Picture 1 (tube, one colour):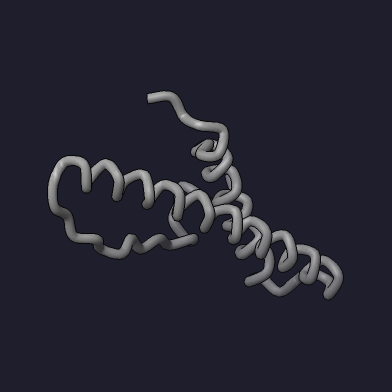
Picture 2 (cartoon, rainbow, N blue to C red; picture 1 turned 90 degrees about the horizontal axis):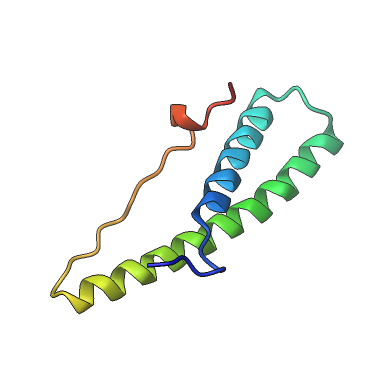
Amino acid sequence: MPQSKNTKMPDFEKSLAELGKIVKRMEQGEQTLYDTLKDFERGMVLSEKCQKSLDQAQQKVEKLVKKHGSYKLEPLEYDLDDEQYDEQ
């Protein structure tokens, strides 16, 4: 099934990786106030973008599952400290 323009997973992965880097920088506490605020603002934009992508993916999964029978939704936990998003 071709992906629509609204659900590009590579964009999600890039956004999530960038968000992870921002979180690490902010946790280190070595930035200026200006840079911290800039990162916070960018992080909020990325967070919203990722949440929208996840919501769209969940809707798609729900449609597919409903089409094929009953289901039970369980929350998916994600850890931004996951090694695959660490800066190399």
